[in-house]
Length: 205
Image (cartoon, rainbow, N blue to C red):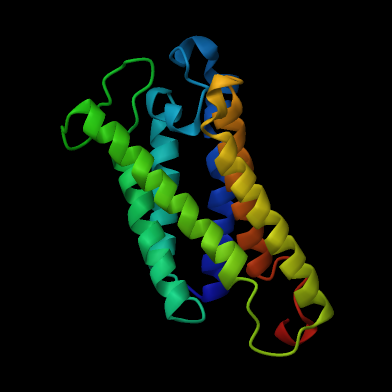
């Protein structure tokens, strides 16, 4: 698969990820989601959509692993993000005191904090790609490149804002879910722009 197609796939998956919990509620109703199930995206592990959520995470990990980008930094940032995404999928966090049902049978608290740590690494790597790698240029700074960089920086700051919102549950129950949705949507948009889906330079068409 070419680099542009990989970028497009990563972007599309990034846009799909935040809405798996919401889709679960719309299709199956709130009674199928545990108490606190809409608190954050990781709650999807306990909804009827868990296989879709985990599948999207694993697909994202796979595409990131094979993405080499333009330089060695691109390559290794995406490799680290890939491993973090895979760990996030296989080590669920705890919701409402329920057993994690993780695939490796580790203690629930181990699975919970492993999940949180891996998710933070994944978010950090994606923000680094969007804010510091996508904005580089190897040639002339074209009008469309300036527009793309503006979008990348907007997405970067939205990702930072989304990350800051995650621990603010003490102020509003839905802050973590909203923050993760903003973060991953911004990430998906940035990857789609990088794929050439929007504001592509004429010479690259």
